[in-house]
Length: 242
Image 1 (cartoon, helix red, strand yellow):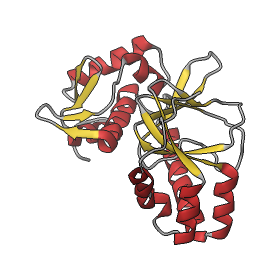
Image 2 (cartoon, helix red, strand yellow):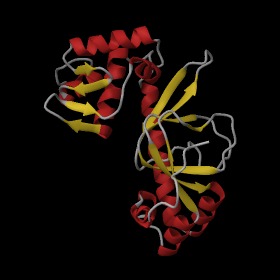
Image 3 (cartoon, one colour):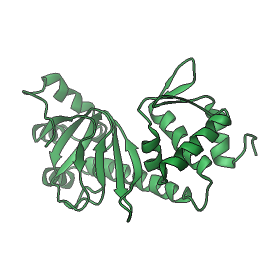
Image 4 (cartoon, helix red, strand yellow):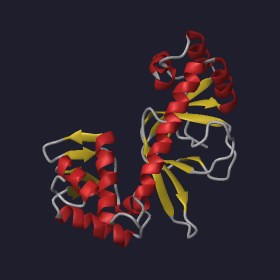
């Protein structure tokens, strides 16, 4: 079980839900029912919120922190699909109870958890809520389609990792004197899961990107030294505009 927030969360926490992306265009009545029928829950790093092939009746809206969405290969190795943070939903499906993915926290996370049946009922009553959720799912499908282009067979691993790091820097980057710091721990094991390759291969690819002057690695932290150069490399395989 997860580590639930002790006691009743402050009223301010629930008031902040009114600004939740999924409720922006919804009716006041929908917002009220949404906030009345869920709860704010926190989990520590390394907690499995969702397990593939298990039933789950809750929808997890991420309020704070980041999660890793992954599946297992036939060999039992992790294959990371997404890194999701605030303003995302951990579940892959809104309508079905059975999970097809794993969701694991990679740092302490807070969620707003609401039962699936309640969310579906609210969607029936409020088209704006339904529209917001459909648009979210469409964006996720677009990301999956884009990832299919970046399979090992169609793009060199160096460019594949450069693409993933560039996007992580865009979504979770902090500008520093050294470059853009990706605000999460990125171990070689984690990067191997991200690429779907052995640790040794991931380590070699990281060294190549460092040799190219694209990244700086300090312990488990990665800095993007030149975001524009990184983008050119993963798109074109060179550092020259085409």
